[in-house]
Length: 126
Image (cartoon, rainbow, N blue to C red):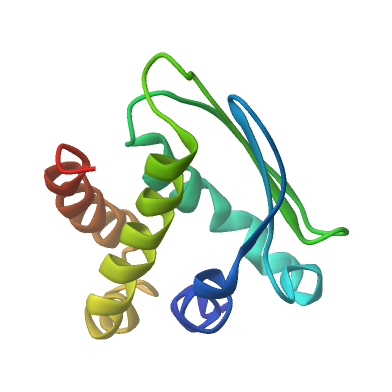
């Protein structure tokens, strides 16, 4: 099984905005182009987490280039809030690393529900 928590701990915190327009961010994630194909089954959980922030329109992953393209409604959120939100997702994932490691293999939906609950409580503070 792909260890998404380890991947997040090592790489997602080091993401870099490589292109931006109002309502659109292209983010480079180090070594994203090197993850195995198992990661595709987990991207839905990351997408759900990102989409908790009001105003997110779309999240697209390009594993070849190692980029994530985020589009958002500039009337609802801004670049700074989106970047703070990505940091918050990372922070909560790392804080729950042991819980995720112990439960993800048997019940990833339970884990995702728990993380989503925590993120929803944080979304109002962004």
